[in-house]
Length: 268
Ligand code: ADP
Ligand code: MG
Image (cartoon, rainbow, N blue to C red; front, side):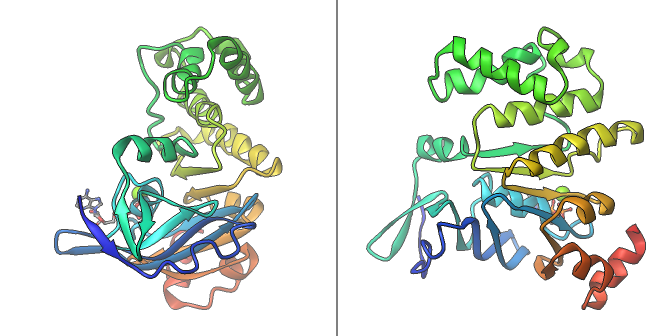
């Protein structure tokens, strides 16, 4: 187990409003430094869209937020709680796997490729984690699962298996499954990139609805129209750093950096 010394005096600062706080995060894979000092703050109830070219470190950043990847330096907190570490005597000590898993239940993750359990029905996909990870009673968990499936427009599919659903339906199930754990924040890694074009809209509509109900979200996507309409903040990453960030109108329509302009000219 590795211990790291870091300055975490302001971990709790603004924790009444800041839900996700990424502070000076560096991450390398061997000699390759993929995150080169990333700072990011997401306020409760806000939607942050991350844009950036392939290889810029977007997925790695999301994976560090729920501690699927360990950082080399810096720290991350969710709702004022350090992720992956506890502080003691000015040092950070890695949490035990079981405590990391517990923290992860507060962080919903929606992947590009849905990652549903293929051998479980839609309903069971939603009930599995609340019952086995959180030890919630089955009856209320099923009721909640049905409500969530209704919310994403899939009330009729409770007994279907993932292979019987379209990609758009599978992704909506994945979103409902993430919500079943009542996460403090939902992370989306290119949630529509694996979908046929005609199915993208139904998934974006579900995410848009969630934004309207005050769910805190970080969405990595290339859907600029969605960013413009739904994001409170647009973050442009390149080469493992945040190049610029701000309201959609500023970053998308009047980017200050050449790298942002070059990227947007390719995707718009
Ligand atoms: P993005 O999501 O913006 O496309 P990634 O975060 O997936 O970027 O990747 C950033 C860089 O890190 C890429 O060069 C990628 O090859 C590298 N990388 C990502 N994960 C690993 C890993 N587990 N081992 C080695 N290199 C990795
Ligand atoms: Mg990626």
